[in-house]
Amino acid sequence: MPLPLLANILQHVRSEIVSDAAEHLILVDSNDLVLGSLDKQTCHDGQGVLHRAFSLFVFNAHGHLLLQKRAPQKRLWPEFWSNSCCSHPRQGETMEAAVLRRSEQELGFSQPVEFVYKFEYQASYLSLGSEHELCSVFISRFNGEPNINATEIMDWRWCPPQELEVMLNTQPQLFTPWFKLEWQRLSTEFGHRLPAQPDKPPKK
Image (cartoon, rainbow, N blue to C red; front, side, top):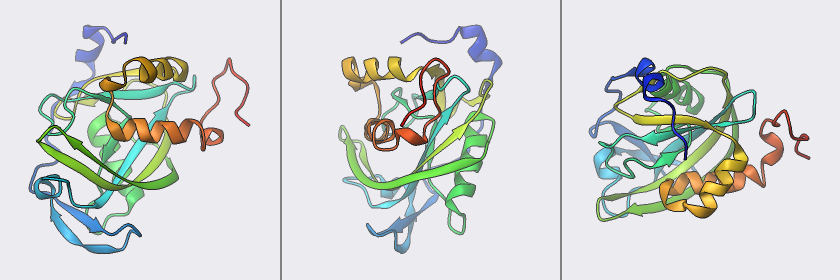
């Protein structure tokens, strides 16, 4: 997978701590009924405790998807490629507000977002912990270059969907499990919601 030039990366990097293991996440059941809260560390121990989360997919005017490579210090799936941004809402915060906040914190920008769908998944990473999330998936548009937060992201790139499909088919081990699940549904079931590529006919 081609990477941006190092000089380009270094010009658009920040280093800010925006969350920690003691941060409390919102516990829910499979119907999104709030059950309480629990610190992030414990939420990701063992098989994980179901909590609210979101995933954001940012597209540019060419229909390319902004991918991020997770920072090496991440507890779960470090140095894996994933969607543009993902995190958790805080207590008393709407999901949309959480998406905008975290996009600004991780990518250095925030744009209006559109909710697409919600789903539950569980995935374990080696013996280090698990994700068990009721995840809301959003899309957004942005033209430009992100100002990435190096505490969260080690690399990024704009990726054409056709190239992404090839990578997912030939090197799926490079990507986070939630991203693979989300892209499969976004690109098929919700393909009509994604921006058309200028050289491709609109999705029907």
